[in-house]
Amino acid sequence: MNEVIGFIIIAVGLVFDLFGCIGLVRMPNVYTRLQAATKCVTLGTCSILFGVLCITGFGPTGVKALVCLVFVAITSPTAAHAIARGSHKFGIHVHKDAVTDKYAEEIDDPSVVSSGSNDQEEGETL
Image 1 (cartoon, one colour):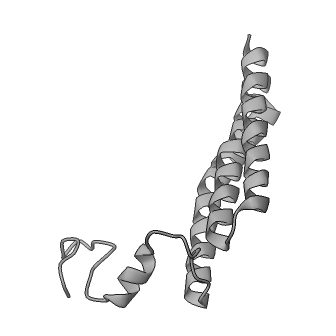
Image 2 (cartoon, one colour; image 1 turned 180 degrees about the vertical axis):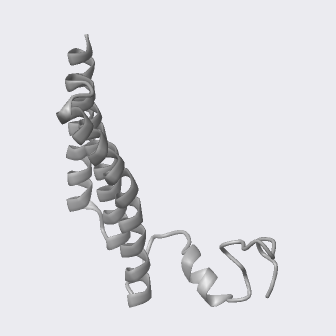
């Protein structure tokens, strides 16, 4: 029964990876491509690794899959954020049909505290 569930989870992961690759090719700019690639890696690859864990159990292969799953789940969103922030700072603009650019709004108004430190409430001026 665990093998059937594992293969189903792997198939779902492969579908996420396929759609993510299609999105990577078809999206118009770096930000939307990055979103498609990040969803692809996070959901697709982590599902495949979790499926391997379901099939093999907590043997040597399953533990390696679990360690890789945790590593991918932590590093993929972090890397995507770093790439998006670097792209924005480098001057790559969002798509012309984009509704809003929150990061540019925060840069334009430096008096807004966006991270919310312990001493100040969010939105409080410096």
